[in-house]
Image 1 (cartoon, rainbow, N blue to C red):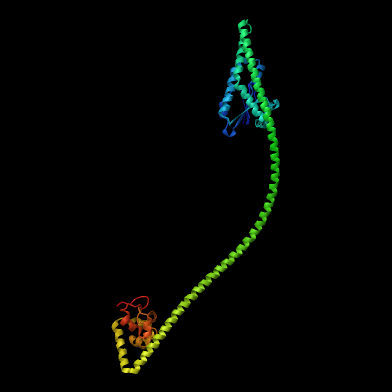
Image 2: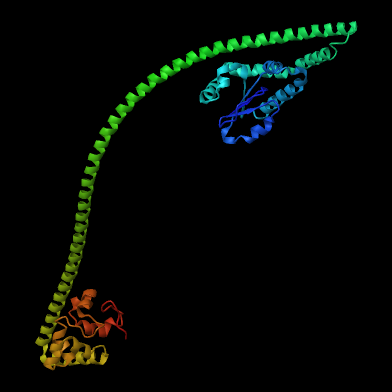
Amino acid sequence: MFVSISNAKSRPENSDQVIYASFNSDLEEIYKSINAQLRPITIIYDPPVRAVGLQLQTNAQVIDSLPLFESFYEKLLVLKLKYTDDVILVSSDILSDDLKRNVDSEYVNCIEQIVHTTVACHMMLYAFYLVSNNEILNRLNKKLSYCTKYFDQPIPSEKITSFITENNKLKSDNKALLEQINSLKENIKNLESKCDLLVKDNDLLVESLHQSQEKYEILLKDNKNVLSKLETKRKKLSARDKENQEIIKSLHFAQEMCEVQAEQALKRDNEFRKYKDEIKLRLLWLTTSVQNTKNNFRSSSRSFRKLVRKEIEEIEKSGLFDKEFYLNSYTDVAQKNIEPILHYFLYGVYEGRDPSASFNTLSYLSLHEDVAQAGINPFIHFIRHGRIENRKTTSSKLKN
């Protein structure tokens, strides 16, 4: 955003990019009225010499306008010091007349270019120097006012002498000021030469940057080719990975099946071994039992029958034989109309039948190998010894 300030009578109308103001305008109010998004603002002002020249063209009294000029430049300096980063000052004497008359986009672009040049910065410093030394101008204006006021009156010789002395002092001050201005100009030239060197260095850097950019583009192309090849290989590896995953899944499934089959085989093997052990014990018991029976028959058949009756009575008196369970479990015994205890004692025990739900004949032989080796009827052994010894009949224990 640009603010153009001049003491000229005629000013163009404000636009979106430029605000036109006079020396009487309130600079602080103009600054605050501009949206913060449009900052920093560039203030283009008439320097003191140009302001005095324009005032003379209007045939106005310069002496009367000096307080206005002094107040304006003081406000301008205060605004710059207060909003250093948001205010840029540009003296209008570095702009061409064509640019001043034609307020358009080209005008704005040219101003932007001027603001960012070393010359513009030093002209701005020069303008500040003039403003800060306006005390000399004020003293001069006072003398001009004094001369104008008493132009038609005779001037005393003392006043003429005083005026000459003061004038000489002003000349001396003016000479010192000119020397300072020349020193500033010399500094500007030195800075411009340094700026030229910096521009040359910048051109070299730009050229080097272009070369680096070309190399980077070549490397970028090579990198794209490498990435393309890597992408192709990645796709192939992905396809192989999918195949490997399928193979791994098949292997896992096969392994699980093998483990299941191995577990089943081990279970069957354990069952077979258990069954084999039971068969061995059963054969051992049957062999021993048959041998005991043969021995009893050889001794005397009367004593054997007596032994049978005794053991049957012992089973019946124990109350552990469940006749109802035996007949319901083995319907062939019920159909033959045989006494259940007698059938169990003569046939059932050798066929692996159970006298009750809580006693398993084969399990008792399997759990207690000494009973199988002795060839004793397992149920008789439990009645006589097993229940006292609290031996297991199946998974549970019989109660007395």
